[in-house]
Image (cartoon, rainbow, N blue to C red; front, top):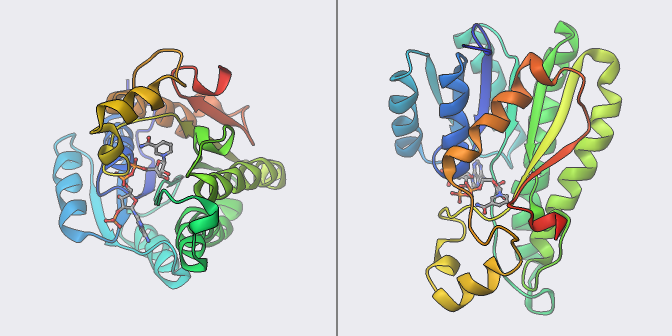
Length: 250
Ligand SMILES: NC(=O)c1ccc[n+]([C@@H]2O[C@H](COP(=O)([O-])OP(=O)(O)OC[C@H]3O[C@@H](n4cnc5c(N)ncnc54)[C@H](OP(=O)(O)O)[C@@H]3O)[C@@H](O)[C@H]2O)c1
């Protein structure tokens, strides 16, 4: 019934969207959760919802692009929740801009959050997970790490980087009993893309790439996170699992 009972999970980007859904699913499966993002008020709302499942929820305002913030997040989780078993590196940003019009600032902005943020999480939690000889790292990649789309080249490069980091770190930490996998969602309507999906013609165009012709439902992301966080996935590492209505297969 509660595959994550007694476990502690950090979820970054837990203030809204997929991160909030993942945090609530992990709490629903029995984990205590440390909730990280920049917006304290939104994290507190996630914590209120998580507490309704009967689990402990710790709010830790964090900018994942800043290593010292992420180091403090791991330290507070260990100190206040007593252990760390699962790290979900979910924080992400997407600015839609053709490469020829992009600035160095656009590039750095997406790289800093989407890829350096994942590196920072793994680097800060790694020594602890390696020492305890167990742990689950779950990174958020994207279908656009695999499939091209005009305007998304910078974002795609960061997510391709997440997939490569996941593959290689899965190999590197296999001997330490730590599994590293990624989830690659297709389109889920969140703050990240609601402006695009609010335009019927553009939404139609985007859904033409998706064999199921629909976006994902927020409740469809949690079960995969619970699977990757639990002992059920102990023989899986270095993988990116696509949850995309067939988008990457089409
Ligand atoms: N929605 C989709 O269709 C889709 C598809 C594929 C992959 N993804 C990936 O899934 C993840 C979640 O996306 P989403 O759709 O839920 O987007 P979202 O609703 O815009 O949420 C993004 C989350 O990231 C956090 N964040 C942004 N910058 C941050 C920073 N510097 N430090 C810490 N946290 C930061 C935000 O919190 P604050 O603003 O409070 O910091 C927020 O909680 C992202 O990695 C995204 O690339 C999404």
